[in-house]
Length: 197
Image (cartoon, rainbow, N blue to C red; front, side):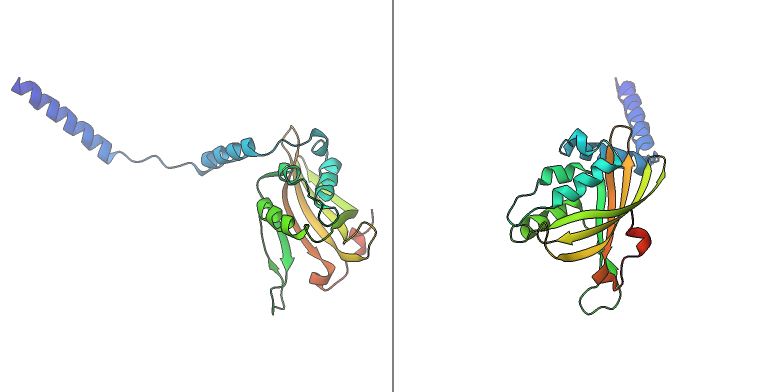
């Protein structure tokens, strides 16, 4: 009996030593990123098929969903459904007292929070007036010139360019990022080559 106990103790000791000295497996950042992305995709609201069937469709939906009169609720679930997990909205702005521009990345969720507050008291209508598109397979870069008004036919309150990155995953189109600047912030006029269709 004592020999059996000794043998078990030796075996257990060897196993413990092997476990203690085993080199831990390095985490694979791409695998964990893919897992997080899949989980985030599953949580997104389902997009309207007509909103994501083409480049034209998703850009039209993007402008349409943020536009409307003061006090009119926007369809924020529709807005969320257009963006791929990890997407950013990046305005260029001049911080108070600064003379140079700074990028201010926010998430679609940040934009929703701001939009809910702003549109409760302010109308906002943004439309595309020109577009330049460059594509390489599923990767698409759109320079989309916009005009914004407080009412449908009111005076111009902003004009600028949205740099929009789109992606097609074989099933639908997604907005990956929107990077934008307006004329007032830039201190210059939108060039003619991005104001003509």
